Length: 177
Image 1 (cartoon, rainbow, N blue to C red):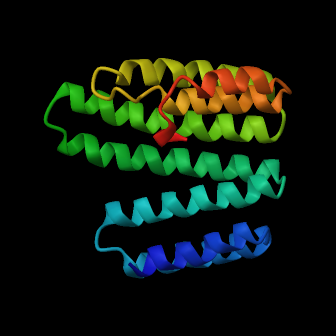
Image 2 (image 1 turned 90 degrees about the vertical axis):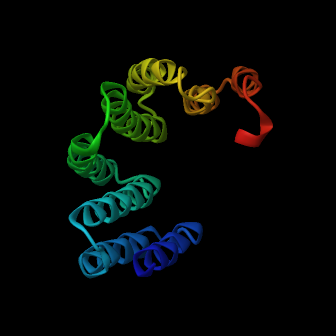
């Protein structure tokens, strides 16, 4: 709980647009998380969550290089966590689900970064990747396409096509907005 409370405090800086303070607080919390975690896997999860928080702060402060480094760190941590989860998996289907979840996390962060930094062609490439992942998750999750549609709508909005963005948002239930 100490780690999560520290992250809530760090995240509050984002709402105040104090991005530098958010990064400092998240980094301090990440370092302290070594003391709070009960297992190696939990340490990895805390570190990954901290890097995701750093990504949000760095990308919204328009630090593209820092945002990319945070994504790279999330990817590395996600792969380590996936290896641990795969080691406990009971079936080939569960192993595939674990891999897809990790791939979806990284694709989503890349799309978000690409949209924020107006790299729309790259966002489309990552969006295509996310669509394939989401479609393969439909067999177990009827709402698997929601993240894809949200990013697709966001991309259209940032490209200056609000009508297309609204049309896409209309494809899924209001409860997911």
